[in-house]
Image 1 (cartoon, one colour):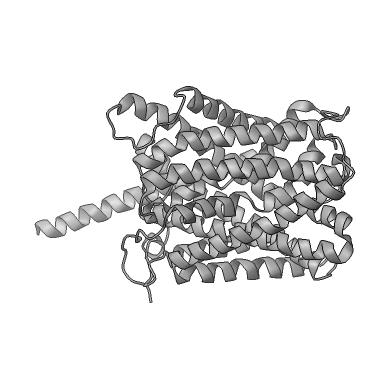
Image 2: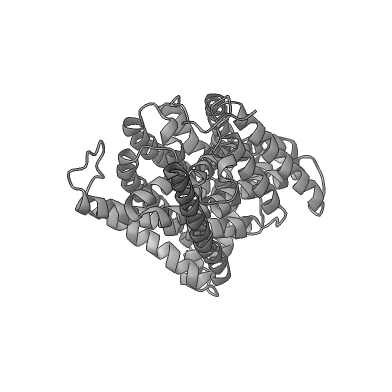
Length: 454
C-alpha cells in the first residue's frame, strides 16, 4: 500500500555514497569494454591506454567541478536539480526526461544484458540461446527492483557488501596476471595502420567514459544523505581516484596475459584472461566473481535511477506523475523503482549492449557539460552564495571539464551520427511533453483558484 507523497528520510552516510560510486563505476565496463576499445584501435594498445587515461582525467575534472554545485543543491535528483538551479525548469525537465527515459534505464538494461551473457556462459548454454540471456537479464532486474523497494538503508548495506566483494575477482586477476603472464606491449603500436585515428579515439573514449560512468549518480541520493555538504565531495573524489587506479592496472594486467589484438576478438575479455591463467575450472570461478561485480553495477543503477525518476515526477509534467512520486512505508520511491525496472526490461529486448551504452553516455555528457558550465555561471551570478566546497584551481578545472565534455558530444555526433540522432530525438521529444503538461497544470491551478473565489 503506497502512502501519500513525502520527503525521503536522510539516513545515508559517507560509506554508502562511496560504495554507491564504486559499486556503479567499477562494474561491467572494466570487464567487457576492452573489447570495444581495442576493436576501435584495430588491436593496437597505445591509443586504447591513452583513452583510459584521458577518460580518468576528464572524469576527475568533472567530479571536482560538480562537487561544488552538489553542495549548493544537496537534494535528491542529482543532475536534474543542478540543471534546474542554473538554467530553469524547462532545461531541468529535459535533463530528467532523458535521464529517466534513456540514460538510467539504458544503463540498467545494458548491465542486465551483460549479466545475462555472463550467466549464460557460466551455465554452459550456447551463445546462440538468446532467449536464455534475455530471461536471465529480466529476472536479474526484477530481483534487484524488489530488493530496492524494501528500504533505502538495506539497499545501501547491500550495495556496500557487493562493492567490497567485487574487489576479490579484480585483485585475483591483477595479482595472478602479473605473476603468471608473459607480458605484452601496452603502448605500441599506437594505432593499427588501416584505422582512422579521430574516429577510433572517439569510440574508444566513449567506451572508457562508460566504464567510469555512474559517478554523477551519487547526487541522486544527496537528499537522503545525513551530511551531503561534507560527505558528497569526499566520496566523489575518493571514488574516482580508486576507480582510475583500478581501470589502468586492470588493462595492463589483461595485456600481461593476452595482447590487445586478441582482447579485441572476445566480448568477454576478463573471462578469457581468467581462463588462460587458471584453466577452465578456475576461470569459471573467477567468472562467477565477475558476475557478482556486474550485479553490483545493476543494483547501483536501479538505486540511483529511481531517484531521478522520482524527482522528475515531482514536476508533475510527465504521465503518471502522482503515482511515480509516491513513497512507500519503507521510505523509498517504490513506484519509480518499478518504472525504471520495467522500462529497462523492455530495452533488454534489443540485446545491444554497446549501442545502449553509447547513446546513454552521449546524452548524459550533454547535460554533464551544461552542469560544468553552470558552476561558472553561479560563481558570476551568485558570488556570495554559501559554498561548503569550492572547486580547486578555479577556473582551470571547470574549463578542462567543459572542453572534455564538449569534445565527447561533438566527436560522437561526427563518429556515431545514428546513435547521436537517437539520443537527440528522445531529448527533443521532451519539449512537447513539457509544454502539454505545463499547460495542463496551469489550467488545473486556474480552475482551483476559481473554485476558491466562488
